[in-house]
Amino acid sequence: MLESAAPSPGFATRCTRVLLSPWSRLGLLATLLAAAGATVLVCRPERLLADGWPPQLSGGAAVVLFAVAYGLCTAAFVPRPILNLAAGALFGAPFGTAAALAGTVLGSGIAFGLGRLLGQDALRPLLRGRWLRAADRQLSRHGFRSMLAIRLFPGVPFAAANYCAAVSRMGWLPFLLATGLGSVPNTAAYVIAGSHATAPTSPAFIAAMGFIALTGLAAVVVAWRKRGRMRESGEHAPS
Image 1 (cartoon, one colour):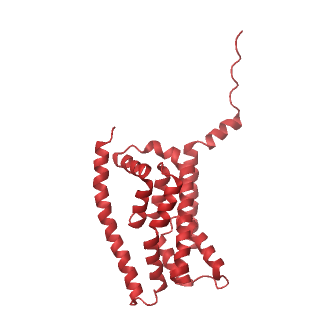
Image 2 (cartoon, rainbow, N blue to C red):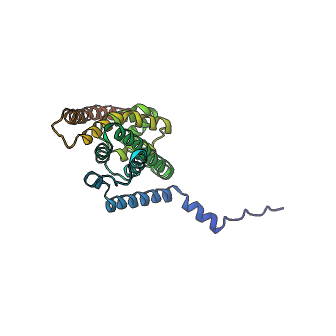
Image 3 (cartoon, one colour):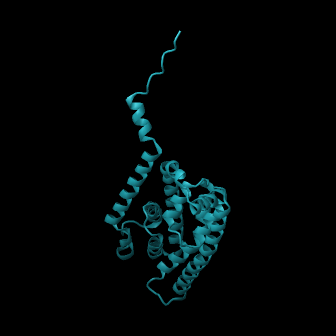
């Protein structure tokens, strides 16, 4: 007796498969990021530096709201230095640093989650270049250490580092811990500079800007050394 052929999937099933395919999800991620970037260009969050925080918002609620807005802005590629300076100018060094660090972790988590859910499956098969494979191995095997170095020594754009980490096999906990710990020094320096922006000759402002310059120089040195190690790792990696 001949077995009946399995029924072909229906139209709804085929549409669902297409919509949930890796490339469809990657297209959705690109659309979301483009929309977020357009929103940032229209809303211009950098106006906080010139116009200040709405006077009707104050106290702890204002700090929490700023942290949430900070996180959303960083996920949409708004440069963190601008937001850190604004945090210092609006809330002073202690509360501004707390708000900026909370927003940093929130924004990195949003970006990491979007990249992991919508982009990883489509982009991982494209990691074929020698340097790309070496960078992926570094992030996947030594996630906490690598991300901590990236956060401590600025150079790699914040949002780009988030989405690149999402494509790797780095875990959530190492990523968020390294982001929170590694972002403290430079975030605090920018916030302190913002809180003393009206007194650019003050010792606090000069010290903060000096620290930012030193970490920038250190980032160049670390990147140069890491470049050589990644090249060696790529050359000895199996094809």
